[in-house]
Length: 322
Image (cartoon, rainbow, N blue to C red; front, side, top):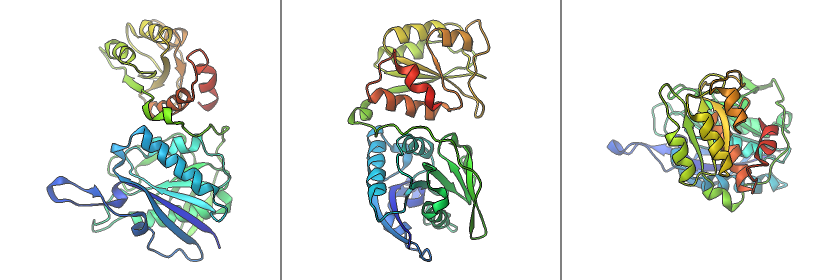
């Protein structure tokens, strides 16, 4: 009989209305695991109970440590993490980066609070439990299960504020056809990185977005005020306007790593343009993020820096994961 551990962290799936004050996370992991799952057994415990928009890097580290401990239990066949959808893509990617177990970790949540007329949390939890327990999904790392689709953490992002399935991107690894889980793909896995150390809690990686008329003033301010890395969310394939290439050069020279990402939802960063575009930004020291969006690129950068990666070694450490 397969056994799954359910770790609760809060989010909409655990929230109930609070009148004019809005919904607040209050339900426990045990509340979310009330339904029976056939021959599967589920045990539940709370790691956190908060909205994911309030999470700190230290709390992400707490979640990662809880998942590690659950996966290390020989009686556990898989782990489910319930989480708010706002920042689920960041937590899922961090868990995937450090995932060194053959067992699956599956994150899920809800778009409707627990006390809504039609809550979607119970169905999502049931599907996530099935995915976490399925031996065919072993070796997939951290996954996201939502509204009948199971996708890789890497490359996934919240693409709609209110839709029943708000996530897009990543690689679909399975989907539900009736009550049957149909496995469709095995995404490429990178070598696992070590768990985030305590330094992760205070590692500052800022995101600066390029737009028409943008100046590098905010970029320079982030570096002066102590940022250890900056992710530049450029336009198109990774471009920015006048002054940014010089700002990148100053940043790297001051010991602050720079990652060049794109504000475009899908597609890789590819240096194509000069005159201050991606070619010049990379020549100044920015590291292209490949197909990582700015938010997941930020998580990778923070993890590497927390482990003490110096700026001159940062490109070599970053590239294998993008």
